[in-house]
Length: 21
Image: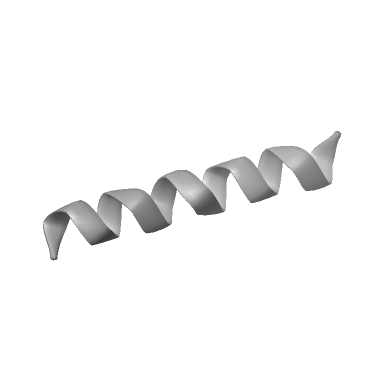
């Protein structure tokens, strides 16, 4: 579960960065 949460956070961060750019 912990690993899954980390993956979700990383993906969310990437998506946010992509949107900002």
